[in-house]
Length: 129
Image (cartoon, rainbow, N blue to C red; front, side, top):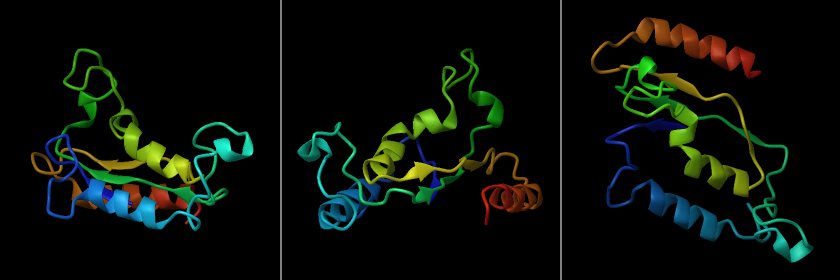
């Protein structure tokens, strides 16, 4: 899944990401998940039917890489994946496991498209693609 990071929120469009996920998860009942997991005596979030499937986030953002994982910087020591915790949990709810997230940093202020293309190719190879 590719996600541009805009203004630290999901896009607020007529058919934004939240609405897309709401429709997908509601329509996916019985196909993507059987229940929330507790129906079979399991824990909440264990009823996904996509066990063994994986997902990968590919994210573009203008923030520089050094703004992450440093408590003195803007994101207060949080990683990119921590910013997308809720979206990760939506995929986990379906039973999916994450591959390593790919991020292109500083895309407006200091674009490195040729380097990012090479990095993406290597990333995909490491992930088995």
